[in-house]
Image (tube, rainbow, N blue to C red; front, side, top):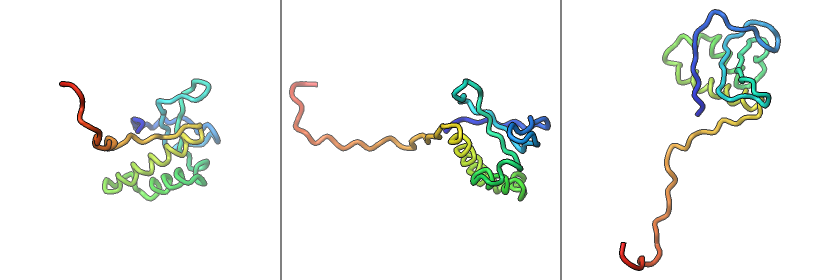
Length: 115
């Protein structure tokens, strides 16, 4: 999974789509086709209708960001939001495999010679 880091800030930029206030802005390590950094912007006005962004907005507005018991839910919603925005830029988040693939046992004849 792509590494993301977060910083709290009282000085977020304005939304690049509507110039309204942002709830969060995360810069991804990937760059777009023009070499510019991709910023995941979460805006209450622009993102309410989007599936993952809308769910993340509901999480924050319901107070989920202040409850440690809901941290796994928030982390999952953030990854889903990341996938949604990255897909809009033409990227797909690829999960790392959790286990090595199982190879079949060798069932051939005895090896020739000495090892």
